[in-house]
Image 1 (cartoon, one colour):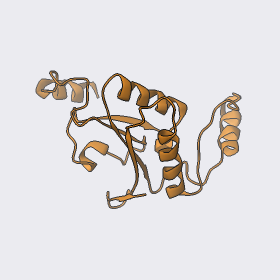
Image 2: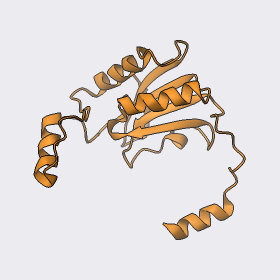
Image 3: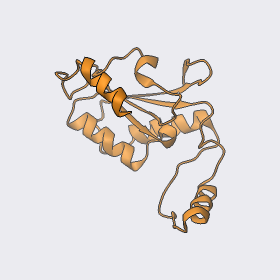
Image 4: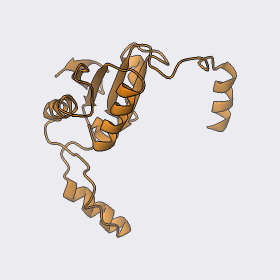
Length: 157
């Protein structure tokens, strides 16, 4: 990885890009390794913030990032993208808690893993959570999508 980074740094030309995303956009999506949000949306380096977590969920920490993005760095649009074949689909918080407890002995009862049963429902829930957040500017546009990991295509929810 360090050798790859050395080659990347040799040709890197984005050092003068501003911290404010050129398109005033922030994308909230899953950490799934099959997703590559910038090219999937026709975006270039510097066009958008990308917030990634397990499931692409509008968790408390994701909302924190959206607050920074909107209030400090001028974004005015949030795009939520969940995807087919997500590891959080069909599991439960209790199942995840049990796995962690059995593997490590640690108590995760204070964590919300935000698993889901309904893919489109999870997108609608996260869009609603963002729209209803009292911490975000009321003029922020929020939309939701599902990306098919087999084809790369997006569909609006």
